[in-house]
Length: 315
Image (tube, rainbow, N blue to C red):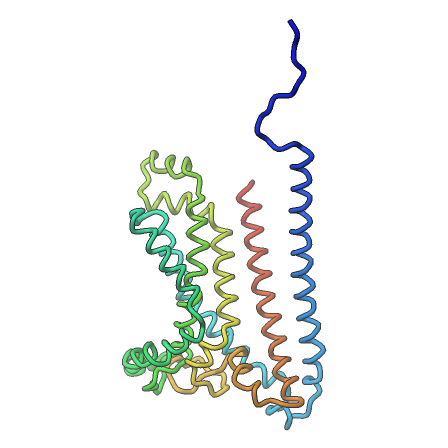
């Protein structure tokens, strides 16, 4: 009997073609990574070169005693608004992601997920118009109540504004803008939790919440941190919505309900740049450099925490 030596057709691509495709994909991915690094380096170099003249600029050209005195209130307002936004958005986003992935029926979970994803497509200026015309005025009675009953707290010492254009309103608008980003990432992470782990916890007598606490949260811890950091980056860099909603006076205060509010770096640049000239442009670019460094540090910290969580989870 003669044995045929002709290779059988298995339907798979030849090894050479498969390896060529891998090389092309790897080259494209490497080129994209290098391009992103070069773009970031170019932005950093531009901001540094254009911002350095502001360090030695005279006080009368800066509008403050020195560049630190000028930038500090803006940095304070940026961090305050972003921190308040994430404090509101993070728990809501995680709860929504859990509802979509583990609690709501499938026929209801999909439409909810689509609606939340659509929030990310709404332009910033639309959020700003909504905040200044609808959301802010309807928060004014709540601010008046807080100023009347909780004025002993520095956050609500008032006097409460009647327009609702406060740092707290801006933070709540930022929270709504960051919510779809955090929710979408957390939802995907929760859905990837191994089914066997969840079924094992339920089989041992755990309730649904205990199962989520023992299996879903530990599995997705690094992803949750990454999602929150991405949402924080969105809140730090938001411009138009904050510029439209916030009635800023450039002070440093923790009073959240009065008409005297700190501004943010991004909003200050957007409002001041059209009329700026000469050294004033360099001052605004220097403040942009500060925002760039803060955002970079936040994202770097988020990546480090996420990587550390993955390493610990793999042990």
